[in-house]
Length: 426
Image (cartoon, rainbow, N blue to C red; front, top):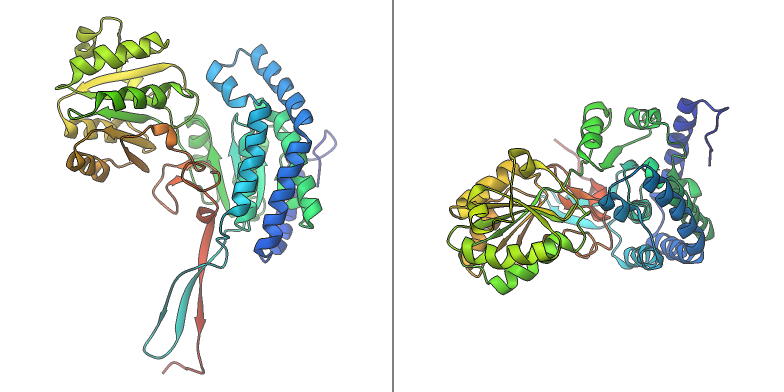
């Protein structure tokens, strides 16, 4: 696997990554399920064996981040501990247990002339992944690509350089033990931003898909500059709407979890909408509990009149992913105003309604135009592992190819196989 250094030309180095990825893909795409699953299990073993080295590397990243005064939410995303390293290994093992999407038949039919048509799942090819902060993405992305028969080239954020390298080293050791080429999973080992531009160029036509995962600026740059297809994972401007027929016991538990369980993840609720018919009772109870848990509330004038501790929100607050213990609040006239607010201000990520009225829940789920719509549960369940996908490569907020948590099956495309018995066309 090539290493970049001062004597190398960056363009040559990146193109070599592309060539090696394409070469390894030709072998990986025909690997059977048992070989891929064995590799994933060996990768998990290596992650556990290398826990000490991974945590030492992470300490270096955390120290550099603290010296740069990086925010608490980003530090939380970056931070690894023994439990989180074990979670990385567990995720690899869970992915190994999932059905192999490659070769599965989506549908099959026979035409009147006797020809049999089958729509069969196949890998996409070589996937370039550009991401920020969270070191576990290195493992999750690599594992999901491997499971779906894709080679990958990973480019993590500079803040997680040491952690990503340590995790990648463990993963490639597991690959070698399985007999698969270690170039199946490659990590760009330079923080030079020009490497991103080269990746977006397609590396001499060796990249088939780019997946960016991070903040708005990263996503916009990728979408503007990429010369290959992009599967975007935008910010999480998530909403929780407390309907007039909500159970306030449920609402309180759900809101506290949706906002405060982990404030730095994309599934954290950023705006709480409250129906005016229940606003006084709900805010007096839930608002106070949020404040007692050190959550800062930004709200409209109507909510301020109920709870003076609320700070008057600006219009820009409703399009801000705070990733911190800060919650926007707005009182709405009815369910349709709530839906309108979400569709206007949201990012199409994850939005929830809390209500005991099944008809209103169905109306909300149908009309909110987001990748994930929820009823009576926390938006923090917007996670591939919670969906049963083993892990996710991100939450896709676009409309094409995949939406919501992107697991192994979503990293595939299809081809048609046609079987005949001597038929010729007139």
